[in-house]
Amino acid sequence: MIFSMTGFGMAESRTDFGSITIEIRSVNSRYLDLQFRLPDELRMIEQPLREHVSSKLKRGKVDIRASFTRAMPESSERLSAPVIVEAAETFARLKVHLPDIAAPTFADLWNWPTTARTHIEPIQWVAPALQACENALKQLQDTRAREGYRLSQVMCEAADQAAQIATELSTHLPTLLQNQRDKSAQKLRESLEQVSPEGFNQISGEELSARLATEASIYALRVDVSEELDRLNSHIQELHHLLTDGSQNQSLGKRLDFLFQEMNREANTLGSKSGHLKMTRTAIDLKLLIEQMREQAQNIE
Image (tube, rainbow, N blue to C red; front, side):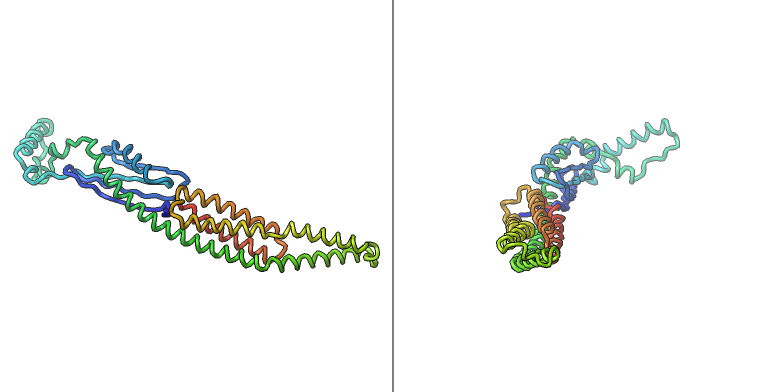
């Protein structure tokens, strides 16, 4: 399965002492870059979360946020006798130093912090945080898989277009080569005539044939792009294999990046060897398609 590096996931885990929410966002990056945004009370969960996320993701800039809410005590506990006594004693102490302070209201007593709300061991948040993280990662991977599938479809379509363009050029290549050989022979003939009106009388048939053969060979070396087209088709086949074979998704983004470099190399060679407008246009079209695929591949994990 192909995974994009762009995704989002969020999950909540509830416990008797409160709830914790983990939110994970990821975008493309060359390496795995984890960024945590945690409240001070949850600093102890960073390392367990880092280890868990690192075991699931390989690449991407990942932003991990956490928030929590402590469980509110039951109504009976909120207005229990110990709570009221504690509030009264606190009010009496404050009254000594602040004579004009108002007495606690019903809302103050209702929201008065209790022992159950204030004494939670930090380590207790680790297990629910990992559970929320696992669920958020599942959502994240689902969105990354859907996006990865769409990216692979786009690249396959572009690869098919590139293969069609290369096949069309291969079909016309013998005609293009023969036309250029004829042009080379004609130019040589015109050059001899410019040197001397009776230039052909100054050179034997064997020498003329050898010269024409040399010119044709030089042109063939410079313009014949059949090998480049064969290598390009081979790269396109490998691209389809990588995008359709789920067992090859290890570092797929890096593999694709290297493959597009090689494809671009062949397209550049086509352009440099161009001896005809059709070959020039073909090289430009191929480079545009390869660049489109390369841009899409930058977001593949």
